[in-house]
Image (cartoon, rainbow, N blue to C red; front, side, top):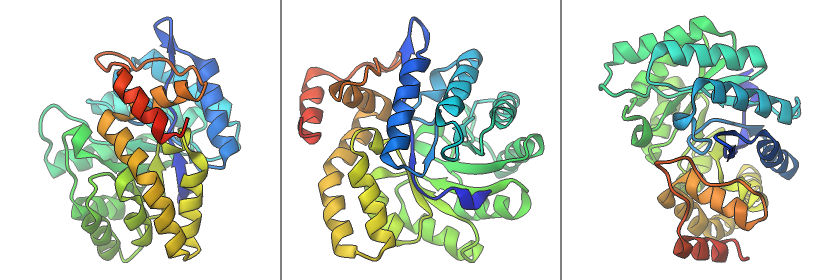
Length: 290
């Protein structure tokens, strides 16, 4: 199953309406990504505001997302939570709903030891029969997993089969490849690093950018894999200002604003996040050439 995930993995926003999930708009957002040509769909990542959903909303989003994809592409569902129990519950729900893989970051208030992190992932693996992407994003989770730990879990925990590395440190990706002998697929989760990461052998790019400019993102991936380095560099140079903008402004905030500018009623992010301000919307409009 791990071989199914590659390329440009699109991360949809989670639209809200009347205090819950707007499944009609979510379906439209996912349809846009699928029809644009992304290689997989990943609901409930940072872009999907997973941290701000209750359990009922999580379930609704999973069901609506898998129904919207309708078997056209692999689905990778984010299931991270502060507790192992809720992470396991979410992973089981996603697996039973038809997800192809789940993504787990060891989110925690307390700093976790490597033994605690490993035990957390082992519990998820024991609960599901699908692949687990170990997601390293210390900027949001508060936990930084070393390449040595990630490769160790790959070697010792059955369903940990992939890594999403979002620190923006290329040397970590190279170290993962070295330690695993190239056996552990790693995905780039740092938008501004995408060109270097793909050149270094990343299996794909986990990104919200295709919500706004899908074709250049896909063309960039294709150019790198085809060895067209000059073309890839030019595409990256054009995309870089947008990639930097959405990361700096917060993915949920900026991508929802961009979708609104493109005519998709994605709505505001959930508080404490706030909608993009007027100056930010004007800048984003320029980046989208609207």
